[in-house]
Image 1: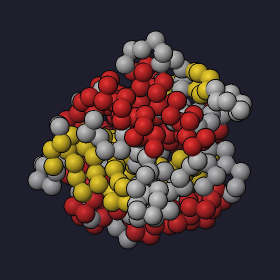
Image 2: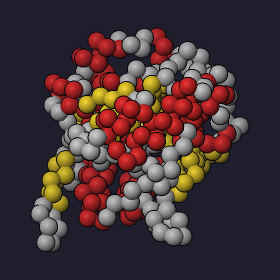
Image 3: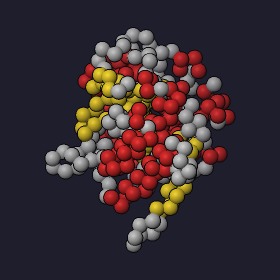
Length: 319
């Protein structure tokens, strides 16, 4: 269990020498940080890397093994690798456990709130299940995963006491020219942010699943249960803590499983609903139905879990 006092011990060492200002948002490069150098700056704080995963047996093993060998065993930078198994049926949990992760079934975490399905639900539950003072989240479908993803996200938090939330960005190749990825970002998220939250338009990858924050940030915010979670947290962090508490890190190139368009439509709708609701629009409800000619309707759920500081079981565990 993490003592409450440990969460307020924030370093006061490095400032912005390695950062580039972009409309108020500091941008870093992952090459500015090394695992051993960051491990020396932990100052007693613990780090949990959380991987929400559903049916990612093909990629979860190498991801966990990389973190374990390079960041746990070699440098002591990471203290915990936590996989939240979101109702997988392909052996994801067994592969992750064999590679050295702590694996928890999503349905077993805070069961009073139901079994829970969806990325946002898994992220919310990971805050409760993880022990770390600093939390790093990474998607579990990255084909070219490298330890630099974790060190890049942790670097600004460990070297700059003013920063509380760090978002990753990268190139996402879809074709032979190495371009075309991030279709929901370019067609939905970026236009919405430009219209409704222009102070966040310098965020390169607003829907990136790779980000890190201090526990006191994660525990204080609601989590959208589904695919709206990434943009919801981005908007909420800026609203509550300010853009000056945020940074982004260039993580180079990310290769993952690019989904067909018909699988992206529900995700796009969740992003729209979440963004519109935070803008105060009457169209940003918690549930909606996606209708597409020739296909069955899809119910898109963007209901939210409460801030964990308001959950009695969480307060008993951490306070």
